[in-house]
Length: 150
Image (tube, rainbow, N blue to C red):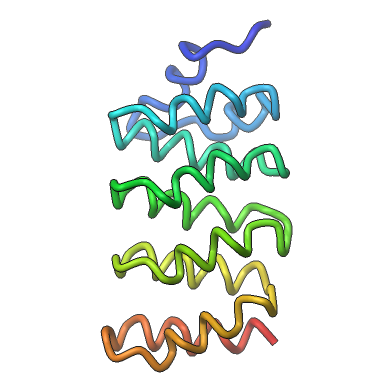
């Protein structure tokens, strides 16, 4: 069965996307997910980014990287969530960018994804957030994450 944009949209457009079925499409779906991730509809784009992360591998990184630079916060939040599914160290540059994002929601998910990655390279960025004057919540999240990134 050929994978089409229509097939992927059918999986993602519901309120509760069928990510398990989407993940089964595998790496062959990644070019189409990258295309969907750049669509004007932020909900569809963010779901495409999340699925790309779940499929994982180096091939998913361009979609997540593109999303991490997007003007729409929803899509950057999806990128911050999606990176947690990637292999340790693969998305450190993307996580560094997301940890420095101005939006607290993006930062929160980036901190959690960085903690899950366990990448020591991100420790300095997380430490900076643990001392940040901008948000007590972000400081708390960062301090918690530091315990996991040793």
